[in-house]
Length: 256
Length: 220
Ligand SMILES: Nc1ncnc2c1ncn2[C@@H]1O[C@H](COP(=O)(O)OP(=O)(O)OP(=O)(O)O)[C@@H](O)[C@H]1O
Ligand SMILES: [Mg+2]
Image (cartoon, rainbow over all chains, first blue to last red; front, side, top):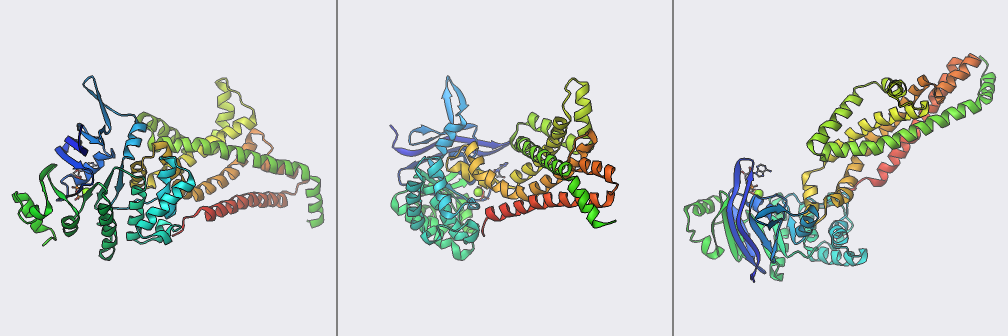
């Protein structure tokens, strides 16, 4: 039996002729907080999107809590799982996006409870209790009846995180969730993520915030041209990079 | 002309005129409803359909939109008859208008669905919604708000287009007005009256549309 919550084995993904992921291997144990860094186009977003099947992938396996994501192999043939099954598997992970992607026609609380009611099939009252608890956790209980258009970027992102986490996922994926925010709003979102880390949430976080990665991650993955170039403890890696590529990347990034 | 005699003539012609208004309303209503249902299917096929289906439906809408409504009306009455599908004038008229309506609604629906950012679908998928659930709870409500103003326009167009059914002998408002004029020779006042009645119908549709629009608009 495996002890890892998430196992990624030999993950390959191409867009047309361009191979974007060239055999990624990565494990996450329960409560791991792993930050993914790397230059633009190195495949960070694509890796995250494969994990919850927002992108199909051609080869390799992704396993979450012992469950193979997206594909079945039977008689040596690899087959995409039925859409309904994939939808269920997507709920195993939560995802927060750079652009928040809140549903503009729903209030904050409705955004958070939609999945609870329609996917988890909870009653409306029960869903509302859970939704309010998470809005409270991200500091927005007073904004429960506001529409996304009435919230600041930082508030929208916190609602989006609450929406994902309320589904009680086994793994949270964050894709540059602070990149679209004004600098003064970045911190409130990072605080929420740190708070989740303290809770023991397993998280895979793509970020350009090196200081944040340094503080929150128990492991950092440096993606380079579709492969993991280097990985390890940020306290080690950021100070003594083993590869030339990482050294260059760190020099060009804001961490210093 | 003496206004009291015009009022008298209206009173005499009240039943034919009322039945004209009624028929116009029924024809418009039926063709808008049928055209909208068909149009939503058209719009969804254009947006989400597999390529062959998309091409087929694209051909249908472009063809219909490029054809004058009058020609559609005549075709569904006379041409369908020659291939053994002889419809009653009323059926043929409603069919032509519904088909016309569907091509416009289809374009409106397609435009609205395609205008929704991809991130909406992805966020919905990410919380585990299936495509059908995503459509019902996330995409359709957003598309609806965008569709409504254009849809109200189309509905008003349908009321106007219903006048064309007079050509195949349907006694809607225009034809019944013309019949009254043939009897009374009061063409100007009665055409004016018909114009006012059409205006009222469309004003009603537009008011209703605005009311719904206000009700469902997203606050920001
Ligand atoms: N839908 C797509 N179609 C074609 N190519 C794509 C698509 N999505 C990503 N790519 C390409 O795949 C490569 C990896 O993209 P990806 O978004 O994963 O990079 P990233 O590491 O997240 O970069 P960034 O830091 O800029 O977000 C890039 O070269 C990109 O152009
Ligand atoms: Mg990216």
